[in-house]
Image (tube, rainbow, N blue to C red):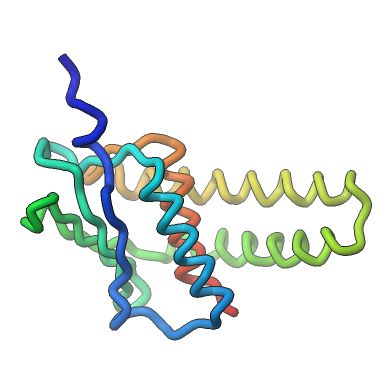
Amino acid sequence: MTEPIVRKRLFEVRLDEATLPRVSADADHERAVAMFDLVEENNFCPLGREDGPFSLTLGQQEGKLNFKIRNEAGEPAIDFIVSMTPFRSLLKDYFMVCDTYFSAIRTAQPRQIEQIDRERTKLHNDGADILAERLADKVEFDRNTARRLFTLVSVLHWKS
């Protein structure tokens, strides 16, 4: 019998506000939406753990992401740090394409908007793949969760 899906998921995602830069109201809203979407639908479990569901707290320190994962009782499951270096170039391109997309939806033809959106989706998928690769030895999660996690990582670095 397989482990019930309810155990292999995040029930909560929080940000370590003390380690994150202050942002505009728009950026703060995007963070809240990304966190909500991730909690609503995910498949997430630290390797070798069977005591989920889990809480994730994300923070930053010296250009790195800090992951603190706890079980439902608040007991530590795993803490780890991920370098942002592999994401820097991709995030720069992603934000540039997003800016182009948001400008285009006001004035461009549908065909142009679709082309820009395809590029935005490709970069987003690439970011999710890098994240999945970086976390593969620590956490088990599916493609959709990787995409939602990358959304959160990207909004944490969004320059408003």
